Image (cartoon, rainbow, N blue to C red):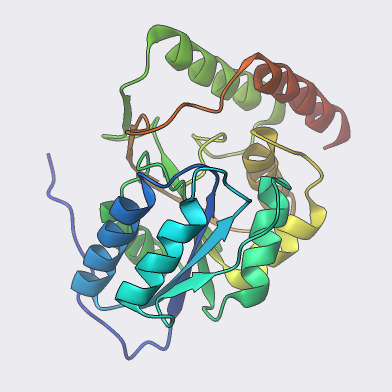
Length: 250
């Protein structure tokens, strides 16, 4: 197996990476994901900021974020909370308004996406000047760990149906670990109408429609360490409805 390459530290490129972390009830996970982000960005040498968008978590996630900001500084930890859950798409729009980077990284705050892959995302983007780079669980040495058979079947089945109906030209449509050029993400979010789990899929479909270039990096997806999964029956029904809508309109 080929060894992973890590970009050499480089602050002279002028690039800055804004990490958007939408959170809801992630008080246990947030300190760990922030520490890991600081570690891998520190080692790679790229300029960055972490924008936490908490949607009124009742478990005290925002208070934890405030403590992290005191520890690591307001230049690295930017807090942009909202009063209640308003959806993933609007969270990205809200975060982008305050982002000072020319690249945006989106990822889950529940430790299912490991920040160790971010230097590979950056390297991949630079190699092909890609408009977006998506983490994939279904190519190379990518994979999923910690899911039961039901979750694996749902994910594989959703991805399979999407590939057949939409032919998007990317191997992992439902993942949410990605790097975008900021202007590209702004353009895509403006056009996307889906909610919930369909949103990430539509982003890739719209990107292909607009002839944006897409790079992929194999990642290991690990089921959340703390807290409960937000995937339920309603989300599955919504996904199927959203998929059929995209099929009919794209």
